Structure formats: structure tokens, C-alpha cells
Image (cartoon, rainbow, N blue to C red):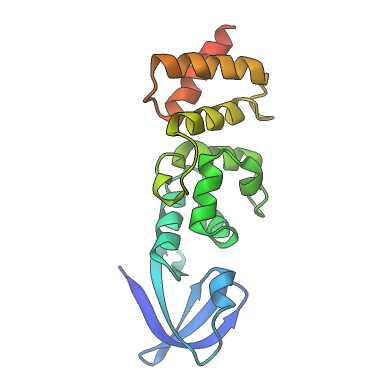
Length: 195
């Protein structure tokens, strides 16, 4: 695996850089905030993630370890490929993305081009606990879990009334306070379906 690339920036535009390295130029997809901080002639050191496909290689570059870890974590979400994961990392720094996921802020996620409501919900459910280390200190984990689950249940996709969703979540948290967000959503759906 290519851990990092260090070399002279030859081109810097949009969301890509060409870095001269040992007599060749490597093109990397890099978040725009990083590209904006570099000019041709600057020396860049970027942490990388290589994706091998049938039709070629894709090299993704990141200024920080947190950006790369966030990108890799997003790749673990079903139906989120490298381009969508990259858009999320490009649009929101890791701390902001993690905070949006933990606080159930769907609007922060689905405001990113190509990320619809369902994808935003999937990201929240799959990553809410994995991203805990990037989010700033806030309400208790139980309160955060409850807020994420209630937001998911009352979203347009699921459409449960907020009062019913809160009652179901409160009941489930009393029974199993250590349950994961994903587990709470599944159990709440079962409970609410029974009426």
C-alpha cells in the first residue's frame, strides 16, 4: 500500500493535485481545502488511500490522518463508494462530519452534492458509534443516541410521529441503555410496527 506521497506540486486545481515524484507525476484526488492551500512549486506530503479497480488505479490524498480515516470509515457504509465518501470528507472536516453524525444532523450530510436523505441516514446509522472520537464533547451518550434514533424514526422516509418515536426510544433505552444506535432503530421499528 502507498502510505504517503511527498513531492513537488506541479498542478493544483479543483479537487486534484499532480505531484512530481522520482521522475513521474502522480495525480491524486485531494479535498479542495487542501488544494487551495498549495501552489505549483510547493512541497506537499499527503497521506494516501489506493483503490484498485479493473479499469485502473485511484489514488486519494489527504492532508491529515483523520481525513483519511474518515474516508476509509465512510467506505465501510453500504452503497457509499469512494466518490461519495470523498465528497463528504471534502465538504466537512472530520470533526464536523463526526459531530453531524452523532447529533443526527441530516441536513449537514444531505446538503452535500450527491448525498441524498437515505444515504445520509445510512451514514448516521452505520457510523454513529465509530466516529465518537472525532466529535466534540457534548450531551451524554444516551441522550445523543436517543436524539439520533428519534431523528431517524421521524424522518420523511420512516415518518413516525415524534411523540410515538420518543416514547418507544425512551422505553427501549430503559430496557437496554447500552444498545447501539442501529440496534435501537431496529427494535424501535419492531415496537412501532406493533402499534
